[in-house]
Length: 139
Picture 1 (cartoon, one colour):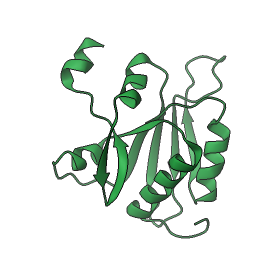
Picture 2: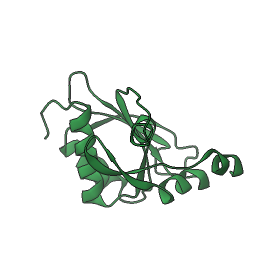
Picture 3: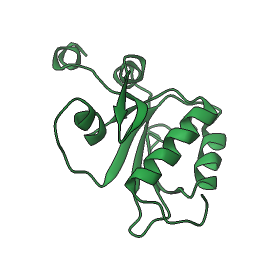
Picture 4: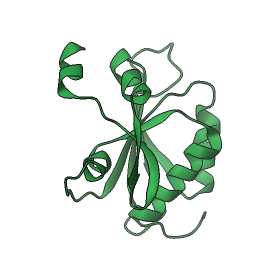
């Protein structure tokens, strides 16, 4: 897919393929789960939480092979941490699709990934965040 224009659906599919290929535990957050759980919501970006360690570099390289380039990192909070807190990727489309990747570091973020459920979004089966408000309050 490298060098081709990616719209939201194509970028989403490429991201899902990369997650499947690399086996990175994840959960989509933001508008995509809202769509899957029955509420219509427009979106122009993709948000997800991933649980990664040493495979971060391999995962970023696999995204790049599919036309998604990392343009910004936020964090890490400490110099000893080799991973960003958030990485912002963009697809090669015009306009590019923004992909916000949150690296699961806190107990809450790890719980989002651990409790994700499969659902259909844009005709694809994906893992979506399902934490309820009572679970958020408990954290």
